[in-house]
Length: 352
Ligand SMILES: Nc1ncnc2c1ncn2[C@@H]1O[C@H](COP(=O)(O)OP(=O)(O)OP(=O)(O)O)[C@@H](O)[C@H]1O
Ligand SMILES: [Mg+2]
Image 1 (cartoon, rainbow, N blue to C red):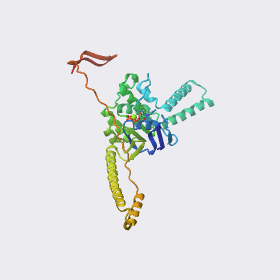
Image 2: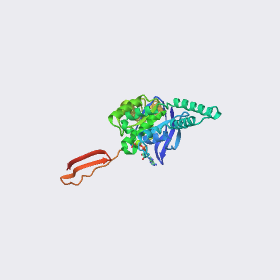
Image 3: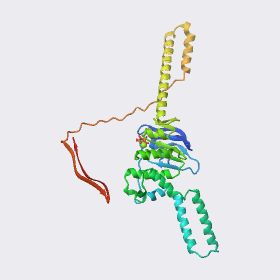
Image 4: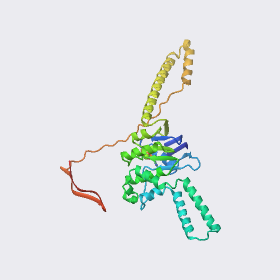
């Protein structure tokens, strides 16, 4: 469980979040939605502890772990895919190193009766128990399942991550986060670099993930398949819907329609009352009624319509100057990385 408590972020006068609060439960599959620039990435960064807010706070139970996939990221060079994936299991790796060291000592020492030797055996036992608890004996098998689910082949495991395209490196990062066994996963546009099969695999993985999930995605089918709750960020506020994306769109429309209908009704009622007051204000015989209507107006709970974010981007493409008949002409084009021939013998024309 994560508590977001009265969180505020503002850049001068502009409020990205104005005292927003909600709770992320371990069973939640939240789609975080809103226009470009609404603050989705910023909210994830703040929950992940990578950025500060201007007010409010985020609370976690002790020992709670957050897995965060940023929208844009940097990469470390010079590691194989498998080594990079394994780097997630920091404690497991340290324990394995310690066990190797103890085994080496046990094999070379001959003071079997000494306290020191006894202590080595005890330590070995403790380390093995801890490893068992951490699932440290299945690390490679787990890594393989996840890497393969994301489209990697056996022969990719020992290749350097540097050799992979941006999209594939992003998959390695995603694999690390999925392996990290975090209590909550925060994924910012995870499907951007995935093909259909990997998206399908990720959907299935996230549906049964043992922890909370918060997703930002423009892929509606993906959101619909995974999420059971939708939080919309708009004009500094959040709107929390206990349903998946498409249903949220319907419910939001319904809510807006109802609000508008109720608002229009009330406006009509107010106008009628004001007209009545205006008309009979100076008539002594109607004084009681007029007074009562004035009171009625003052007591009225006025319906407000939620402000909608109608800002939009505008740009236009100028007509391009006319080109010659053939814009591009390619002859026998090829590209290779060492033995890996990506393509060759390509001929084509691109005509106007
Ligand atoms: N230091 C800053 N000063 C002023 N504005 C900032 C600063 N940092 C971020 N912003 C603004 O905060 C807003 C939220 O950005 P954010 O990246 O969180 O949006 P988003 O909802 O993730 O958008 P997208 O859908 O495009 O990924 C943007 O309008 C951005 O310009
Ligand atoms: Mg973003």
